[in-house]
Length: 323
Image (cartoon, rainbow, N blue to C red; front, side):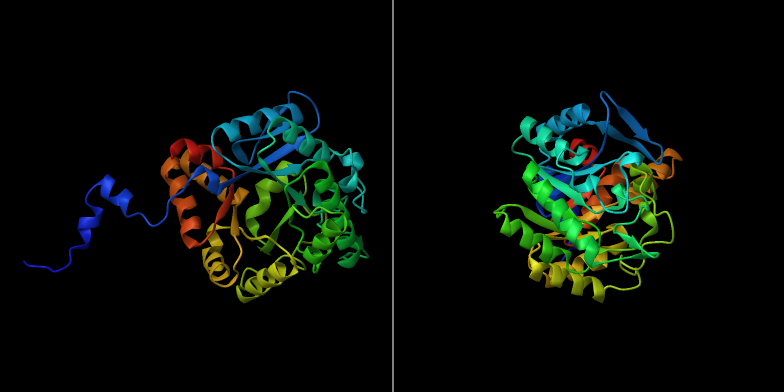
């Protein structure tokens, strides 16, 4: 049989497949999330995230040094706030000597070149477990934005390279950009959680930080997973208000959203491969239902193929080793 085109030629061998691969993962694609707790020499495995840990600050610094040595360029910091420091005002969130602020300084001292991104939201600090201030059972927008802006400023003062508002309050990007500009932090970037959905896939993360909402849910501020046009609208608005990077969260259930935003929003797009997506792979692999290593690389490749320039993932170290 004579054929003009035999497509299988480009799939003949590993070398040929590598030569024509359209999507290539590299260590610099990954953002490594880190969970930080008070104490010394603390390494606590998160029960719903097997193989992932909360670290005290001393061990966090050690972990960051290892990440940097592997070629991972960025970390995203989350802190577990002590219950006695939680309130409905975000008091500890703006404490210049709070755990987040101390963590930023310690990491910058140890690994000056690594890019530090910091979570900006009130849920770890809230006595209600919500991302904003609560009044009469409602998560209020404008008062929350004022605290988020001051929180971002405190992170910049400590040495953060990017602040990453994950709260989903309206207008917070403009307020954060304004306060950074007013205080001469012209080089501090904003990675906006623009398309953050009200997803069932955050459960293990909330276990890690003890930040589950104390009442109701987060559907009045996080996006409805039935919608993608709203996600595009919010990403465009965040870019207009001064965001340097926009994020889609979760990732694997929202590959179509990543692609829409990548096509329309002309700044870098990140995606968060969230705790539930991590836990599903771990659980299925434990049962022998799939090959964990192959699942990790296929999942992360699909996220990048959809259009993500950066991927926040708990598999960052595993992926680098496999690559």
